[in-house]
Amino acid sequence: MESRCENCIVRQFNSLRAMSKEELKKVSDSKTTKTIKKGEPLFEEGDKLNGVYCVRNGVSKLSKLSANGKDQIVKLASKGEVLGQRSVISQESTNLSAIAVDDMEVCFIPKESINNTLQKNPNFTLEVLRHMAHDLKEADDVIVNISQKTVKQRMAEAFLYLKNNFGEDDDGFLALTLSREDISNVVGTATESAIRIISEFKKKGLIHTSGKKIGIKDERKLLELVEGF
Amino acid sequence: MESRCENCIVRQFNSLRAMSKEELKKVSDSKTTKTIKKGEPLFEEGDKLNGVYCVRNGVSKLSKLSANGKDQIVKLASKGEVLGQRSVISQESTNLSAIAVDDMEVCFIPKESINNTLQKNPNFTLEVLRHMAHDLKEADDVIVNISQKTVKQRMAEAFLYLKNNFGEDDDGFLALTLSREDISNVVGTATESAIRIISEFKKKGLIHTSGKKIGIKDERKLLELVEGF
DNA sequence: ACAATTTACTGATAATTATCATATTTTTAA
DNA sequence: TTAAAAATATGATAATTATCAGTAAATTGT
Image (tube, rainbow over all chains, first blue to last red; front, side):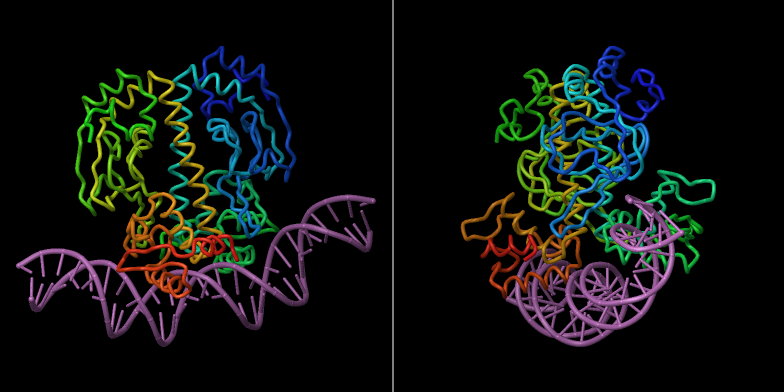
């Protein structure tokens, strides 16, 4: 894949597209590319970040550990997403851990490049702001979903979300394969409950599985379930 | 209270402090002051906002209606907070309703003043960005709390939150009095469940009540409860 | 290839929480 | 002030969800 930010297609999806040619050049010169293996962390809750991570390939889960030892996955980030922005902007340690769900390829961009551009290029700042506004809106939706919907509804929603955001493979399975535990951490339930609901959905013909892979069989019914029928 | 933004103390608490003298002057000339009575909306979910609201007095609940007809309160905003920013920035209709919990006094600032400054004053944009980063972090915490803590723990947390953010009156009651229904909508539970837990906390000497007013009696025990003892 | 470890699954049961019914108190408005 | 309406409160019960215990299957490392 192209190693100069100026030519990187990934950039199209995130706020880096609002950078000028010169700014991008600087970023490109200061960035380093990293490979993160499945299960390894990009960073962990409490870390002070010296830069942001731009995802070129693979998927990362952003999660927060609760007092009872369970992780809640707040977001799944894939190609084009920039991680660690919030921490760099507010100059605080991160409140989330980022762990690779897949093997990942990411670019690390030192915070200096970012902060510099934030102060000089209002367009870039505005673009970052728009992204953050969007994230915040999504977070509000998640809050309402978790508090108002049943686990079953949230499970159905999670499968639809996975299909819409990560697509399906050639055999009709969700392209992003998560462990049952990760699924339960996205949904915010006990692993056993998640597994039970998967079995139930399978029996009812809403989904089909093969090993840990899950495929959507009856999207309409899943949607109806989410809406509460 | 002072009616020129330049001299308004409220400004100190929000991103407007990053505006220049001239920008503030323009804002002040274009703003209008509104009084909102308890229970009335500043704006409602789905509205397209033509500006932002700067809270001078009173408290507003920001909530979202779910399919089953229940409101989830996502945030309580008081003096100094700016509402509707997100909608103005992303030029989308709001995803939240803002309803007065108290009688309120707010300044309406047309979006033109905001957008103009956003494009011209990187400091202001950065300041807004920082605020939004903070809100996003808080939203993440809410997600984790709701999904990982029991209703009882969240109730305890809500009381502590109310004390820390809105203080107590002379008689030791929480300064912000919410209806039981509002409390249940903050916590994300059924109203009856909230009431039951209030009774239980009262019996255990954690809180005391008088009418709808609630006072914290044993902060340490409430904290222990939140932490899971 | 195989033992070891992890992950997935199922059943039984307990704990939590919601819902429905109904009584009481408080607030509102004529 | 007083009837009506709304909010608060409590009990009984049902539904949902978590937890514990244990088995089966899959994955990993050697």
